[in-house]
Amino acid sequence: MIDTFFTIDKGVPAVVALGMFDGVHMGHRALLASCAEMAKELNATPVAHSFTEHPRVFFGQDLGLLTENGERAAIIASLGVVPQLCPFDKATASLEPEAYIRSIAARYDLRGVVAGENHRFGAGAKGDSSLLRHMAEELGFAIRLLQPVFYQGEPVSSSRIRSALLAGDIETANAMLGMPYFFRGTIAPNKRIGTRIGFPTINLDPGRKIVPKYGVYAAEVRFGVELDSEGAALLGVCNVGHRPTVEQEAKANVETHVLSEVGERYGQMATVSLRRMIREERRFETLEALRDQITRDREEAKRFFSQGVGGNESGEGGVSRAGRPREPAE
Image 1 (cartoon, rainbow, N blue to C red):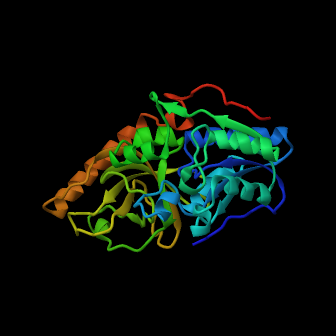
Image 2 (cartoon, rainbow, N blue to C red):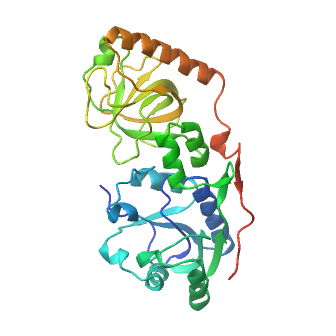
Image 3 (cartoon, rainbow, N blue to C red):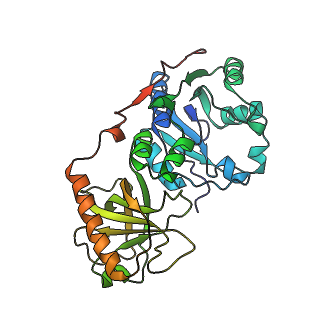
């Protein structure tokens, strides 16, 4: 596991966006865009200052992630901002809010800070926007505090996206993420049960990521090392769950049947993006019954993709900003 993503030298002029950025959702993207804009104005490097470990996980909460560290860093970088993922350990957790901001100011030639109006930081999450304003005045950096981004009348948040995923509402989750929710990893060998019934699959380990409601999803598959691998996506149906017909496994599987022929892919990297839930997972009495249902799942996925997909993932269809950012100390 990579513990730290430090990609710029200490003392570089920087405008820093603060946050965990799990999922890099539409609210985060607004923050990062504002960071890049301010950095351009101040002739500085835009930086997303975050952590390798989610603070809630560090303090013992069982929390499924929306993005693994490498995925989060890659998405942030694709938006024109340098990802700086720092270890979150006991020493970091014990930093008082003032000390935390001073540590960031010592790391960079701090020209500006961008954060959400409701961002909390430091030991006990005691630091708030009022303290940020005070520190900006004391240390001489610009500050920009943004209001939330809303979707369907409520603020976009990582917690809200997790709730949508657990409910199987993948389209709402994708709209708030600004991109399809995905699993990515090395294709693992499987027991070839799908191959025996005429539907070969590729298997991915979900890792530390949150597993959506168990069921079958219309999905897109891309092969390649890079997260944004070029080439057209291949269509598929993805089963997320325990595969109750063939074996009741303790750990959830992400098992995808690609609708077109792709051959053996063991050991290759793949990204499976979920687009719509087709049905909930259930147990079938025979493999023949399972095969017949997969045939119907394939047809349902084809119907979904034939209608054309997209729109909400670009931030349209209900995502909006709640007013302009405040700029109290520039």
